Amino acid sequence: MPELPEVETTLRGIAPLITGRRITAVHIRERRLRWPVPRGLAARLTGQTLLTAQRRAKYLLLATGAGHMIVHLGMSGSLRVLDGATPAGPHDHIDWVLDNGTMLRLRDPRRFGCVLWTRSEPFEHPLLKGLGPEPLSAQFNGAYLYHAAHKRRSAVKAFLMDSHIVAGVGNIYANEALFASGIHPARAAGRISAERYQRLAEAVKYTLRRAITAGGTTLRDFTRADGNPGYFRHALQVYDRAGEPCPRCARPLQRQWIGQRASFLCRSCQH
DNA sequence: AATCGCGCCTGACGGC
DNA sequence: TGCCGTCAGGCGCGAT
Image (cartoon, rainbow, N blue to C red; front, top):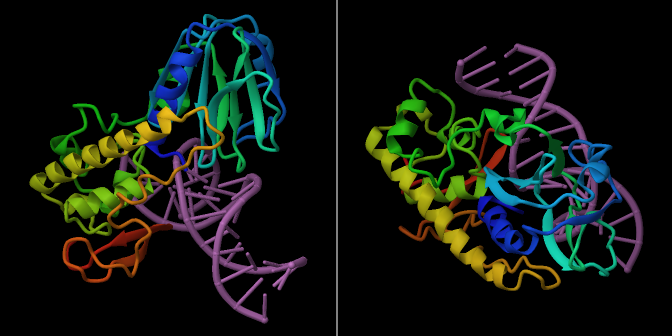
């Protein structure tokens, strides 16, 4: 499942291979993604050059002279650059054929992702406009979190996963960062000290950075058949480890539902 | 304004 | 073995 580090890895993998390339054809086999792929997409893109590729939250923004594509991988999506003659599998929904015989291909079995088109400034698009700061930016820090949490009564984990507060922190990293900073995921966001938020912000950055570094592995064999090596599973301290010993105190880790999401924690290390 | 619950969709997994 | 029910997951959206 693409969390922010995998989206970043995807970006770093495809950007050098697609930027500056002209799109010679677009094949759309399935329009029914989270939102329908716009009707005129192929016509608008054909003949356009891909100018830049960037990431905002878990969205990828691919710029052309005519407008921008906004791509989200949902939870099962992947983008890869392949030889233009590679036959399409059952969930290969869109191919962007490039002028050097390669193509960018979107695969998304569960179709939770999206490919949208905007002719105006992509950061002004309704999906991106209200997003909070990037978790790896200087703007995201303990003081920011502390002020944003003022009087909030929802669980800190839900608060941390709210894209209006900070963009792109998913379930796995929320669990990991809360464990690393010793904060119980169900604690009310408004009842956490500035000092503890400082630790939490650092933990978010640390876990994301480490996962991005691990994603470098994926980066290197990016064009191989399929690449979910599960490399960062081993680095996870609590996620999906209910019943296993806490890495700090060795007492069994718990699974608990907070909101509608499974949370993993240590009852004696997190308060 | 903040918070909650829903639904989109498929593959993996467990129980029978 | 095969069939079926359950669940996970991101996240926008509508309801409260």
